[in-house]
Image: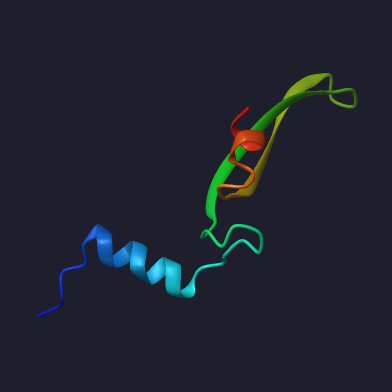
Length: 64
């Protein structure tokens, strides 16, 4: 049977293999950030979706 995976083992695995910040050493978590803008070409509102890396250093800038 397969081994059950709990949240603690997922976090431990992410800290070993995940991308970490060079400044604070924390593992990045990825957040989708959406921005609405008005397109002059099509005369309609559009959305831009980006994946942003968040750690302790820049979470105030991203969430503000």
